[in-house]
Structure formats: C-alpha cells, structure tokens
Amino acid sequence: MAERASALDRVLTQAGGPEILDILAERLSGADLTTLLLEVMRRRSRALSPADVLRRYGRDRFVAPGQIPFARLRQAEDAVLSAVPPGVELITLSPVAPIGTHSALGTVDQNKVVSTIRNSEVAADPTNALALEAALRRRNTPAEPVRLATVQRVVRAQHVAGAATYAHFTLFALVSAGRDTGDLAFERQHAAEHLAVLTAAVRACGVAEPEVKVTVLDERFERVAAELGAARDPDRKDGRGYYTGLCFKIYGKGLEVGDGGFVDWTAGLLGNRKERLLISALGIDRLS
View 1: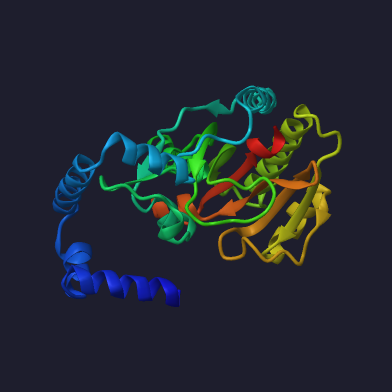
View 2: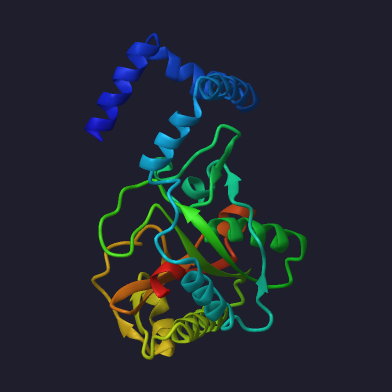
C-alpha cells in the first residue's frame, strides 16, 4: 500500500498537484471522464509504431496467449458442460461488465480488475455478471428461481505466484437465485445441486475422486453442511467476509479447482433481504 501511495503521489505531482485526482474522480461526470480518457488514449495510440505494439505484446502478461493448449482447454470445457443438468440455462456473457461489478458486489479491490475508460471493466469473475443477470430476471419474475451457468475467459490484475496461476484463464460458473422459503430449504437444495454438478464436472475431466471441503460461517448452516456430507474445513481463512453462511472448495489433480458459497449480492441488488444467491466456479485451465 505504501509503495502504491508513493507512486500515486509522484504521478500527481507530475500532473499538476493532488487536486487533479479530485477533479477526475469526483467533479467530472462519467461521460465527461470517458470523453477525456478517450482523447488521451487516442493521442497515445497515435504515437505508437507497429514495432512499439510488438514490444508491448512481447512483455505484457495480460495479452500473451494462454499456456494451456487450445485442444486440451476445449476438451475440458466440453467435459464440464456435459455435467450441467436440465433446467440450468447456459448463457454467453459479455467480456466486459459495468464498472464496479466486482468491487461493489464482491468487495474486491478495484486494482485487481482491469478497468476500461468507458465506465466498464473486463470480466474477472463470471459469477458477478451472472448475479446481475439473475437479479434482473428475479425482478421481472420474482416467483421463479433462476439457475444460470456459463464458461468465460477472465482477466485478473493481481500478481499471483504458484502452479497453474495465470493473468487470464477460463472459468465455468454456476449461480442459483431465489427467495427464502423458510427452513433453509433454498440453501439445502441448491448447495446439494451445486456440489453434485461441480463434482460430476470434475470427474468428467478425469479426476476419479474430487475432494470437497465445506466451511460453516454461520452456525445456522450446520444443518446444510451435515446434509452435504462433505469434509469440514473450519480453519479456512479466505472467503470470510465474501461468503455468508457456508462456503466450500473442491480439489482435484493436487490443486484447488473449484470454489463457491452463499453471497448477499441479489439481496443488495434488489433491496430485499429474503433474496438468496449461491455462486460457484471451476477453473477450466486447472482441469485441462
């Protein structure tokens, strides 16, 4: 954080002073800021030669080709999709989402997302965009549960070290949205369905025995966890404050390949505390 603040101070000094940030962030409308940034990028791109573009292509991790061969990735995608049950609608998401989709819903630092200059951001997690779509459908037909899935290539801006970690990668995502009907009925039904779909998808990719670990975040969800019959992970650190009630991880091929849990996103989007949402995802690259 200190390093980032120091870099920002240096840039603001070069740009004319700290008040520049206030003008850009608070005084300009979204449309006016877009107009300004479009002109900035037009001038910058006009100054670039083909050789400049090639040099950038050779060193920018965001634009380099994926490391998993296309045929293997496509085979894993098809295997995962074969596990999607009837009643779950597969949709094609846009590669961009409204600005704030990841930080406002999922409490993700905006610096971990590739923001654009047109009040949008590059997809970093398909569950966020699926949640927006589910909320729209729930608002229009509140009596009907919504079950959506997708496969999407996403980009994340943070540096992550370790095996099978990339700047861009493919995720299979699944969301279930509906209304609280009492007795944790929604939670019990859809948690069981998500784990059944995800483990079947992992098996379809050649993992004979995927491992599921469940973490209870609210004691009321002990019943849900007990019905799932999965191993417990009470010491899990990540995901607390992001998920509510209960979350889980799926392991295969010696790696974490999936993650999911309950979130309050549709409750906030629709202004109704009775709205429920379960999200989950699998890393296709890790299963390829």
